[in-house]
Amino acid sequence: MFHASIIKVMNYKFIAGIDQSKLTLDVCLIEVSQRQKLGEKKFENTSRGFQKMRKWFDLYVADVNELLLCSEHTGLYSYPLCVFCQEGNLPLWLESPLQIKQSMGIQRGKNDRVDASRIANYAAAHLDKVKLFQMPGKALLGLKQLIAYRERLIRSKKSISTAAKEINEFDADFSGHITRESKSLVKTIVMKIERAEAKIRELIESDKQLSRQYHLVKSVPAVGPIMAAYFLVFTCGFTRFQTSRQFACFSGIAPFEYESGTSIRGKTRVSHLANKSLKTMLNLCAVSMLRKGNEYSDYYKRKIDEGKNKMSVINAIRNKIVSRVFAVIERDTEYLSVEEYKKLTQVESMA
Image (cartoon, rainbow, N blue to C red):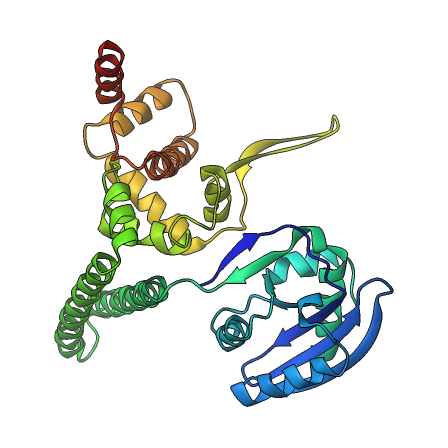
């Protein structure tokens, strides 16, 4: 949902660790140099609660520019706090809950007040890694919501279709009625999916920059309209990641070595930490290209003949797709095949 940009270390003297829930915010305010806890308080997760929190900060912090707010990224629950910080020019760092948890070592006990204190101390210890939140534009926010809505529709369609098929195979009582009703529901859902996809295209075309990026990404073989929209959303308009490798890590398709000393010699494999929906979409793109005669399918056949593992080859194709998408965005030109690129460079050298 949100975009974070790495910034130079600021002279933050105070940090407010915030543990968010649907209804409340638990806040722990500390002074950075001595790691001294100045106060703890609970506020409502509403605009009224945010205003009270701001006044509470003023009791301890004379200059708001010296205060950094840090909280775990909790998706939808983070949105009101993000809006408040954006409008109030308060620096906010949204960090991955897993990143905070793993950095704290073995912990005993858990409650919201303790979590707020742990978040504050994490931020104080990692000020060199601060990533300030930036609210994406309205078009990107709307696009993310539409994609999430489309995913829910697809899950519903799959659930209804599978259940109807299974009950029909057992020839249970009323199976005919259930099958007919299921087909009717599926038909309606398919119509809703088509409308959502039309709205996605309409929203993209309404924004000049997104429209340009969308058509560049879509020029890459294997990348269809929906996959192109996924790239726009999860890269925040190609501002969230600096390299294709970073995006591949986020998607869970970047290979990593697993070796240690002389005893551990594991296979190079991808991490289980990934954006699952994005990884699934990239997999569908890669597999769909194998059914056609193209450079991807030729590459796949060549590697399989060499004895490579099928899934590792498919993963390599997924990475090829990602690297090419980032390349067309960086060059700001549509995709060119190797042959087309060679011809272009020859013409330019002769000119």
